[in-house]
Length: 70
Image 1 (cartoon, rainbow, N blue to C red):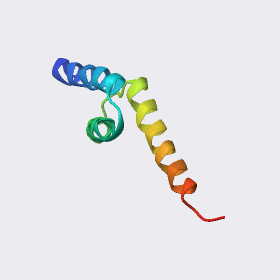
Image 2 (spheres, rainbow, N blue to C red):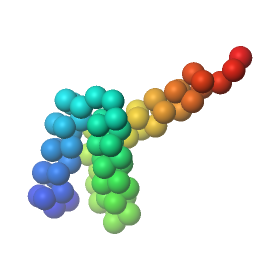
Image 3 (cartoon, rainbow, N blue to C red):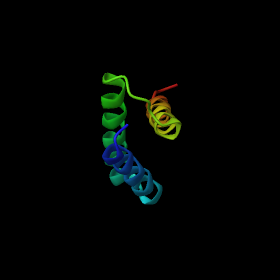
Image 4 (cartoon, one colour):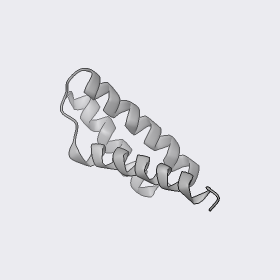
């Protein structure tokens, strides 16, 4: 992985730690795009990045169930 990409991922990590609400969702979108880009070229993805994206998807799925009628 290039040094520039590593630096961008680390920057996203720091921004995500401080972000909340819609700003965090926007940053998660950027992180997910970076992860997908890495996957597309067969590059190694940092475990923390993959875990954050997976956790975000799980949270979105749970939010969908919270709004379902019983």
